[in-house]
Image 1: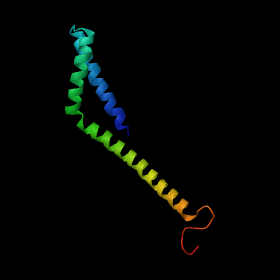
Image 2 (image 1 turned 135 degrees about the vertical axis):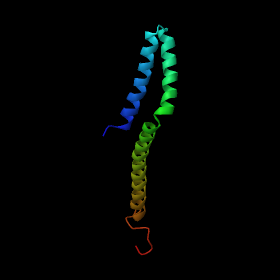
Image 3 (image 1 turned 30 degrees about the vertical axis):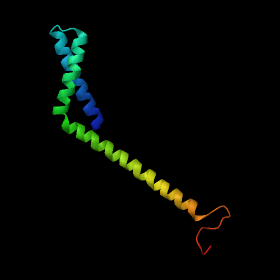
Length: 96
């Protein structure tokens, strides 16, 4: 399966360049064509690319939550290891 990032990015670029080419063929100034194509493609992507944007957001959320969970677990394990022994090699527990 293709990455949602690739699909969303290529679709937005396709909208932009499609509008830019159409406006250029109609004889508009290239700078004006680029500005109008950017604004219109942005608006169209907000309206019509909602599913792709949600898929991209979910993938980002899943990947960042995995990293955050593993970092949190690593910190907990490090804290447990440092609390088990102190500088004299004996544990912090009363029975040691």
